Image 1 (cartoon, rainbow, N blue to C red):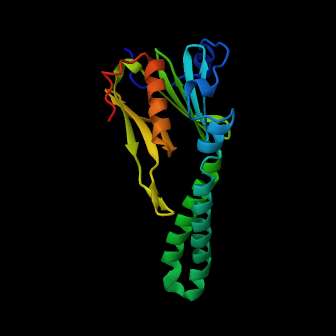
Image 2 (image 1 turned 90 degrees about the vertical axis):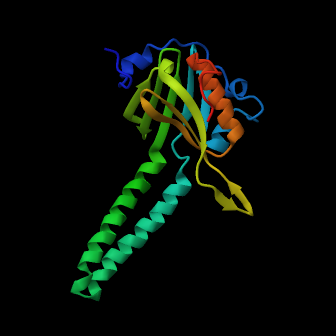
Image 3 (image 1 turned 45 degrees about the vertical axis):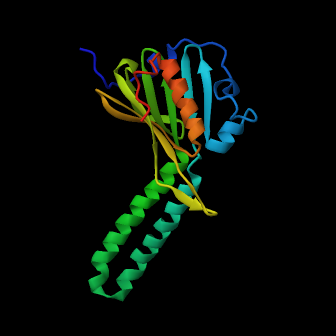
Length: 211
């Protein structure tokens, strides 16, 4: 019986047909000013590898978030060290603060090395999560089971009197839901990537809800 969700091994990825890579400027027209512009601006790269579309969200794109969590980790760690000197009644709070510091420290270490690799073809859509270049989680869905491919706006951040939204792209269907892309602040770019995924997966635009 064919499973909706399954893992893909390294051998199956290597069997993908390859051809000369198509540059990102041809896949994302009007949004790329140079060969490294897409990576510099949004922390991602897009290329066509044979019949497969590859979207790679590079490690290091979340450095600002990692720095913020690092600051909070230091704060909670300092509080955990300071509380015991206030008396025996502070030991419980020390443990709570130490737990928060440890959790935030793990997030701070993880975020800079986190990257996402999306590979789209007519037979499957893969999402690979990597840490420092090593695959730590793999997911696969069949394009035929995708009923909606929606662009959703995350929490807006206010800067200089303007609110900037971070967008994510989520596929849903019989398999549940799968977040393909996130953390992209340009909706036009996200709409372009959505259209490229629909084309690469062989989906019918009128059948896939845009959300």
